[in-house]
Image (tube, rainbow, N blue to C red):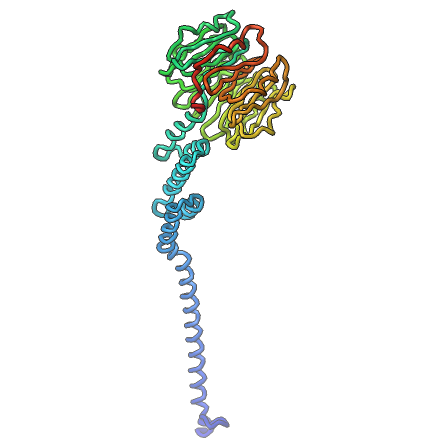
Length: 416
């Protein structure tokens, strides 16, 4: 029996030793498997550390420095994207605002005032961005110093006094005692004036209380049309008085407004972000402005609304029975004014564009040169020349076009 148990295999190794060797090999394989598994786990942990721990503590620091370098190099869009990708790291969220502020400042430095105004407003809660936006809008939006009403025309002179011609059946031309004026607006049968101290005066028909402006304060712009008056306050809110049968005076909830325009039964406001709001009669779609953006100026006709975009094109909505809204081909426009059935545009090169009904001799407007401001009455157009004189075309049944002798008219803020 002893010889059998201690038998050897053909290789000469005893069976007991061979069994022991087999067990050793098995243990080795198990250990190797465990070691391999541990290495795999360690490798996975290394990847996890690389993907999570290192970016959290090392990579963001590097990316932050790169984002800062982009900012300092004036690569604002790339810098903003880089800081946004670092959300939650250090002051990256604050840096996004700083980048936008720097970009707005750069736009201003190169003279792109509308774009700068809108961009400052987009970060209005950052430092003095909101005030800078409002200040810039004050430079962009004209105050009228020459204004055509339905049947009368009024102007502000360089000495702050006012003058008027045309129909005076309601006393709308009784402005000779006004002083310290900086803007005027001629309505249907009333006239409104803005004084340098931010107060407002009015004369003429007051059937619907459209002249009840004596309590208004801190006003920076005014607009009058048929039977209502609208005022823009320095804080971007709006006040209105007069006929409100179409809710055209329901503007008390408006905020951050930089320009206003009163139509016959509607009112339009331009917001600091380049969007537009409207209130009032919308039978012809004149209040369909909710999708407008990148607007730098708004103007109303009796039943239509025009918006000048940041690139100088014009969009229109509302009544188009005489083609008065066919302005889509106009280019480099600075200002627009709307009459009863026509629209006139003033280009940045001071040339004139026209759309709509040419009756009443309005075609003569195409011959005007060196015009810095325009205003359309019901059937008339008046223009302010760079030398402070005025020209007019159209129906003169009430002498509303008798402006040939006018001189020293105050130039609007953008024309100075």
